[in-house]
Image (cartoon, rainbow, N blue to C red):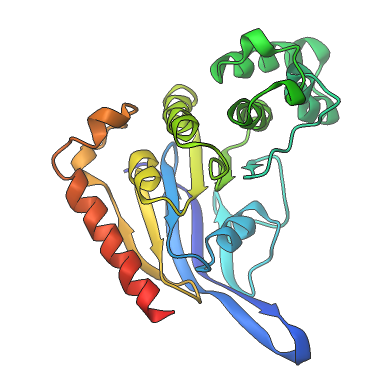
Length: 262
């Protein structure tokens, strides 16, 4: 087992609402994310998946419990965590290359180094031919590749993704999922990904954190044992593996159970 990079210990989140009242979004959630692994947060709508991701990113503070990275408390956003959102976040007035270079430029990376790193990650996401294009000239999937390349170019230890492919058509989403498995293998990137899609979760995950319906509690940690510790980036292959259908059915039952509690 790989060393735990990230640890959540009894994390809860309470939000104030009108009339001096409050609502608990996340309730005492604990789990680890090991280095160089893909961890997927899955559960019914409103179970607090994105809230947990935002606490890992440092965009929200836990109301109780702790989030630690390498044993040190997470306090606010930092370069060791990179976030990719569902909405396209490229700067429309900058080319693909300049978008990917942007964070490095802000952080004082020398010109030659950031050009080399930008070229590497643009190639990694398959956009070398479009390096001088502008976001408005790209498809949705290509714009999301720009966001991924820009985030990776800043060298985060942990890549956080919140429903990153939710706005894409089925074919593009499938190709993007395969791309993420390639990136994880080539770059040894640790990832935490929020999704509501069962197939996507099984396809991507080394480990699935399944959360209950509101408030989000840890219901089950699911390891896709049928993969035998391997990552498979061929969608046609993985759905035919013994054990895939059983895992899909199990997660569908969990979703149905939690849906009936709402």
